[in-house]
Image (cartoon, rainbow, N blue to C red; front, side, top):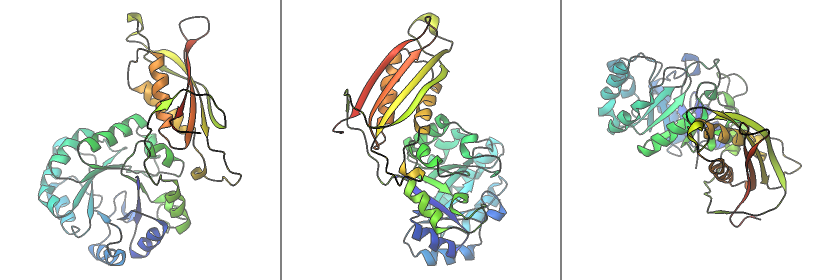
Length: 354
């Protein structure tokens, strides 16, 4: 289950996000920067208000990568369930010193490292964090006006981060000026948390949190994780999501002369979903075609694939991994081997689907 991290400025906003369904109350002062810290007093007041109903995290602040400075800021906030520490732009040695300096505090609170997508993130530090006793790692952005998270990192890079964190036993989170349409796209990657501030307010990032906005984001998050237990060929039609003639350059082909270069490959996908109600008004009510486009881009980015059949089967399985999809038809065509196109079309249905 993907959980909602809601950033608040104090106890009043904490009450609002709890009512709206937040899973983690994250304390920060947006006026002080990407990880602007609230005072220890505000932390204590907020924890009293939350009363253990949900975990509370506190940010250490927008700090230089100086070990003593960061450790002191974390130490006065160890009452929180988690403390988030930004790995701001600095040398690798400086970041390593900060991590090592926090090692003794890992037994007193849950340490969460925050990489910045627009701040020279060094994801090779993930094993170092795990070894030092950190509980998790997140990706955020420093400049909230410089674009959303996905303007700085590809879906492939974000997926690798989540997967590597999971393999190391670290919780993972994604944040950075996220908007409602980003939720279903990022949910495919299965991070432990998606983090929000601006999307939960009445306007700007430093505006007050709004209960209706919190509930909108909460409704977009999948309530459960449903795995695919087998697929089988079948025909059938219903409401369909369409991606037609999406062409990407990728490494494909079993012949030696096809290796080490890219070819144009065309994808078309039809995905059957449950009938869309007449009252559908938001992203929570639909399946976004962006999810299919992201899956195709991820296949293209991973490197050489010998067979178009492999691409078609893997794309079908990825699309069917979403519980809302009943059936999918995938066509994959190589465009540079003849006067028109060669390829494969297949249809797969969720086992037990109707």
